[in-house]
Image (cartoon, rainbow, N blue to C red):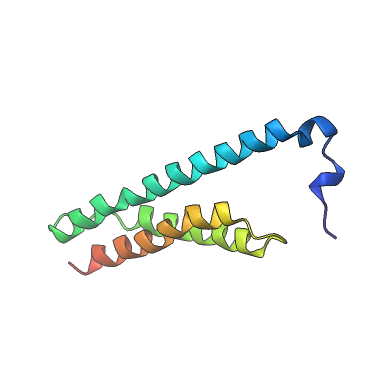
Amino acid sequence: MRFHVDNYASQSEKNEDRIERLHWISRFAIIASVLMYFSYIAVIQGNFTGHPSSPIPPMMAMVNASLWTAYGWQKTHKDWTLIIADLPSIILGFVALITIYVH
């Protein structure tokens, strides 16, 4: 059984200003998420210079982002905001994890 949010949202929650505000919040969230995941570049550089970091943070970031990406992909209407925001974490988390052991 699927629930449709539109059935439970009041008219005031569906207004155009609120929708536009949510679009802007999602755009800023994408930027913040991508910047956060690009911070793994410093971890990767540290791994290559002989200062390996703990494997747990990049591994958990990669697992978390994979789960959120799968969730966004499986929704009735693909949640591209969620997918795009989490793809860098999957890639950079994997690279950071590999460089911990291969340096």
